[in-house]
Image 1 (cartoon, helix red, strand yellow):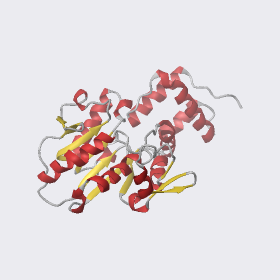
Image 2 (cartoon, helix red, strand yellow):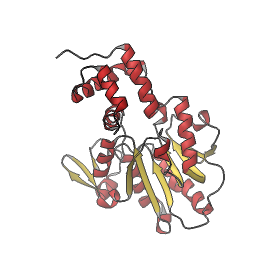
Image 3 (cartoon, helix red, strand yellow):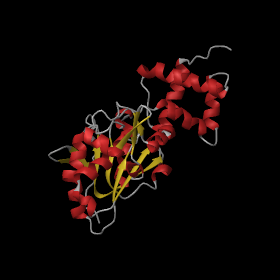
Length: 280
C-alpha cells in the first residue's frame, strides 16, 4: 500500500472546510497534528487518498465521518477547580445578583461549554454544594455541551485520573469520589446533576434550543477561533442568556475585544461579562 501524504493544497482545502463546519482554524504550526489525524481517518475508511476521502467527507449525508474527525481534532485539556476564582465569583457575587432580579422561581440555568471530560461542570456542582446556601431555596439546572461525542461519553462516566483531581482538597475528593481502576469515580449523585449534550457552537440549527440561561461558562475555547467565529459565538451566547445573565471566559480571553453586546462587570473575585437588562 502506498504511503498516504497530505499536500499543502490538501491541507488548505481541509483547513477551510473544517473552519466552516466547526469554527476552528488550524495554524500552519498545527500541520503535523492535522496531517497525522487525517491520514489515520483515510486509512480507517479505506479511502485511496486524500481526494477520495475528502469527497466522501463532504457528501456523506449522515455526517458520521465528520463527527469522528472532530473527535480526533479537538483538544480536551482540563482538571477540577481550574481557574477556581470564577467558581468563587459564581457563588459569592453572580448568583446573589441573579436571584435578586428573578421575578419568579424558575430554575437557575447554568451552561458549561465545552464540557470536555466533565471536570468543569462537576466542579460547578461541587462548588454549589459546598459554598452556596441558596441551593436550599433554588433549583439549579446544569447543562454541559461539547462537539466531541467521545468526550461527552467520558464525562458521563465520570472516571478521572489522579492528575485531573490533583487540585481538589482531600476532604472533597473523599466526599465525592471513590478510588476505582487506578483513578477516581465521581459519585452517582453528581453525575445525575449534569445533563451532557452534543452541540456545535457554530451551527445555528444546533443552537436554537439553547435559551434562557443565567450563567454561561465558556473558558479557553475562543482562543481556538478567529475573530469572525468569536463574534458569532458572542452573538450565540447573547441569544442564549436571559437579560442580566453572565458569561465567564478564560483568563486569557476578553469579550471586550470580541463584541460590544456585553458590559464588563468587575466583581471582587473575577471580571465577567453581562447581557444588559434584568431577568424577568
